[in-house]
Length: 143
Image 1 (cartoon, rainbow, N blue to C red):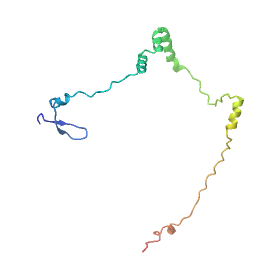
Image 2: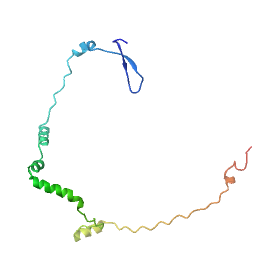
Image 3: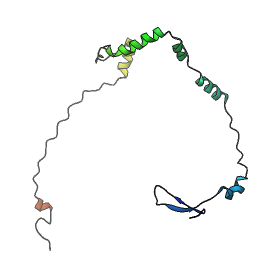
Image 4: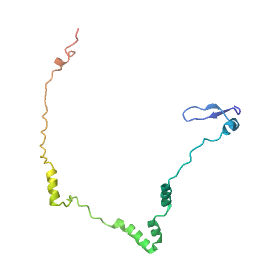
């Protein structure tokens, strides 16, 4: 094969034999200066936000300062939490307290909705059908 060609393996095709290149072939292109780009301006608010995010939160600093005996008590409480029985939630509806004036305004604005009447079930319709009348081929061949 020599230095001019190389085998390339791709996921969707068989092996390909392609021409190879060396860095010496691109010396002229590498001599060109890179494109000039505008400098990126960073807003002061962004810098302050990043500095604040890098600081340790106050609650974390207080947590580190806590007495180990307090931490032990907290951990025990967490471990015993599975033993605590929570009463079931009442399924009843809770009505908010509304003043009489507001209640009157609500009643005035609320349209009266009549109770829906039940829709009668449709009765099945039985039709007698004679296929011979509808189908011209049922009587026999048409000549």
